[in-house]
Image 1 (tube, rainbow, N blue to C red):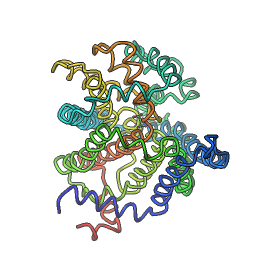
Image 2: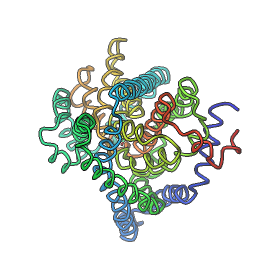
Image 3: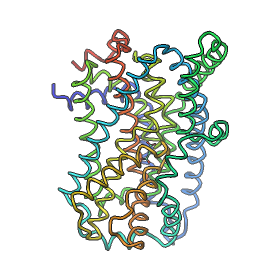
Length: 450
Ligand code: ASP
């Protein structure tokens, strides 16, 4: 069977197995569209009933996200410390690291290539300038201006901030990259000091087991959580958002589909013997939660649970997935490339080949340094938009325009960011004999697919 068909069937089966989350997702989209339609009364006033429903659902959705977020930092710290300290051979750690960077790199380079080729070919931005200036309100523009100024010259600072000055304060602020850097260095040190590390490693083993238990509990709430989050998100833009901007949406969705249905499976086939369809069916749960939350970091506990239950060793999961949740944002990089080229087309700025490569390069850097939280990919676009020949007004206006329609795109790209983390974890695990094929192949739906 063709690979992309296998993926679609696998996703269908995964959805069937997690039907309750999928129903939550679809019901959320439908209710969101209805609420958007009736948000104003016929007299043009705010419909109080609709506002009440949205605020109740917002409370439920935010509580769900916070419940998962609350375990992310303890999970990341304990997973990395337990996983890495168990790799006593530093050559093995080096191999994991090298392969992880290699595969994440390949996936992201392909993503920006697809994004730029599609946008240059389809030209979705041509002729939409007028639409851009009408649609971005003055309030949004002023908010965006602030965010833009903050980000503009921020590249050097982004790198400096990766190294924590005080790990406790990074942990308290939930700053993932410095926390990862600290946990990695600390874990390698624990692996080197021998037996004396036992009490600390034992402590983090308990923390890890407890956080995974909490993840199981929280996941029982995934259906109402995803329903509430999706309804609130969709109610803010309704269905009308798709009309008028079909070119921009179309290019992005096609790009993301190519990445999901062709690039990931081909890489899995080329570099591993992981059964593609079985694997996709086993991570659908994480993909749906990623869609609902629009946050790779918040989805991390679930991504880890899916991968470990399907046979990827703890060593690989604890290393590759937390790093992937912050550093590997291939779908965000694809989105950023499309969005930036789209804006230059809208404002009739012609790009040289060098500038296109520059956009792709900065998209890789900006996406890898952005946090796995909603909207982060859009904010870091400011880094890429610099120096492309757009005026300050155009930059703010265009940026505000992208801002207004970002949430739905964020949901899609987060789903892919999470999928590619799991795909790379599976490939690295296969290469390093860290994948338990018996566990993976005992996945009940396998016969149906092959
Ligand atoms: N929300 C995305 C993520 O968490 C990042 C982005 O805004 O693109 O993966």
